[in-house]
Image 1 (cartoon, rainbow, N blue to C red):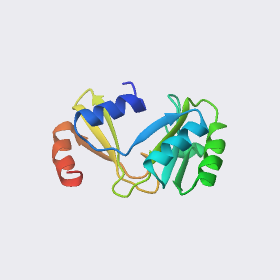
Image 2: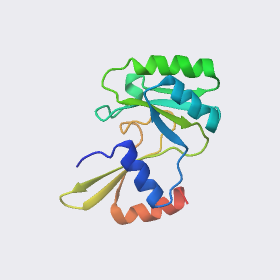
Image 3: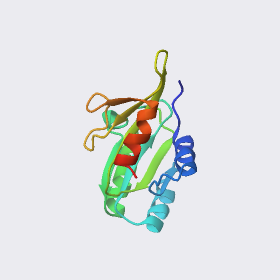
Image 4: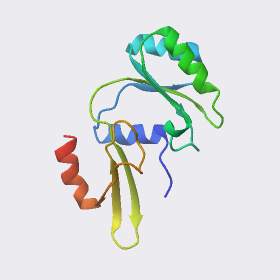
Length: 144
């Protein structure tokens, strides 16, 4: 089953009225800086890649950037990473962070994987599996 890229994920979340922080992808540090002036600090920078799934494992996430000097350094550090298409710039916020994945199991049908680990978003750390109907209950309890 193919992975959704950022644009596809954003479109899907907005379709179902699931809020996300303001986010854009840039190849230019100057354009990123202009965007950050619009949304304000603090921000998080992440590598944007269609081939790299675990960004944190590659040092591809810079969090809690509070000023232009930190923004420039983080952008410069990340843009050097191979196999990336750009740098994703996002307003840093508080709240729950989750990773959702889905696969179609030959026996059970659609199965949802959920990771709620705040410090390390790796499916190795905290993983829950639900048969698809269980997703509705989990989502209402934890997100809504």
